[in-house]
Image 1: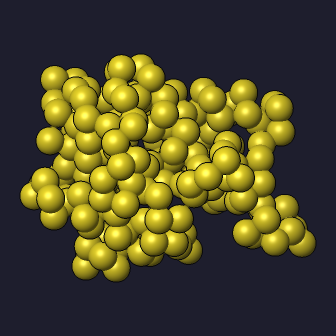
Image 2: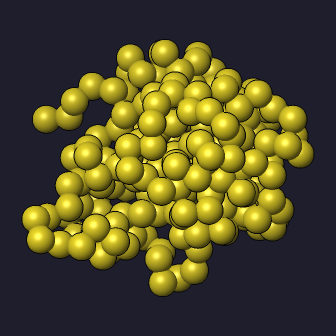
Length: 190
C-alpha cells in the first residue's frame, strides 16, 4: 500500500494558492482514479483506492502546512507501511520555475516547513517526494505572502499541467519505481 500525501493548507482561504500544489495534485489523482476524498482520518481528508494495481491512501493533511508530519505519522503508524518505499509526498517548491517537477528519494527540507515537520516526525529524510515548482519569490516580497498568493491566469494554466504531470509521476513511481520517474520527469523544461 502507498500513502500519497499532498501538502497544503485547509479552508477556502488557501484554495488554489502556491502552497497548495500538493493538494491540487492529490485532487487531480482523486478525479482521475475515481477516489472519493471525503473521509476524515489521521488529521486529514483521505480517500482509498487503487493506482497502477496497488492500494493507495490519498492524504490531504488538515493540520496546516507546518504540522503536516502529525497527520502523515498517524497514517504511517496505522497502516504500518515502509515510509522509505511506500510514502510519496507532493509539495510546492519556490526554487523551481513554475511547472517544473523534481523527484527525490531523500534530502533536506530546503527551508520548507511542511517537509521539516515531516522529517522531524519520521526521524529521517529518506522518503520519496515530488516537488512542484511554483517559481521564485520576487525580490522584496514577503515569502509567506508569496506562497499563500494565487497564480496569475497564465501561471495557473501552466500549473494545471504540472499537477497532471505530478500525478503521472506518482503513477510511474507506483508502477516502475522512483528511479524511472526521476528519469522521465526531472528534465528541465524550456
